Length: 80
View 1 (cartoon, helix red, strand yellow):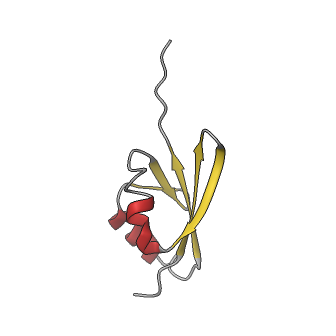
View 2: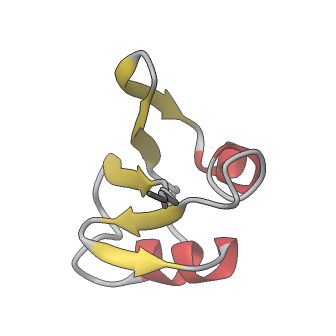
C-alpha cells in the first residue's frame, strides 16, 4: 500500500468554520470518534467508517494525493 495522505478536515462550530490537518491514522478519533455523530464526506463522497475511508484513499484517483479533503456535517435538530 502506498503512503497514506494527510487529511484536511473542515467542520463548523459555534465559533464558525474550523479546519485542521491530521495524519491518516488520527482519522479514527478525529472523524469517527469525538465527532462520530457527524456525517463525513471525503473528496465529495460520504464515508461511514474508517474502513470506507481507507478504501477511498486506495482508489486510483486518490492514492497518489498528498492531502484528502474531509468535510464534517453536523445534523441539527430544531423545533418550533
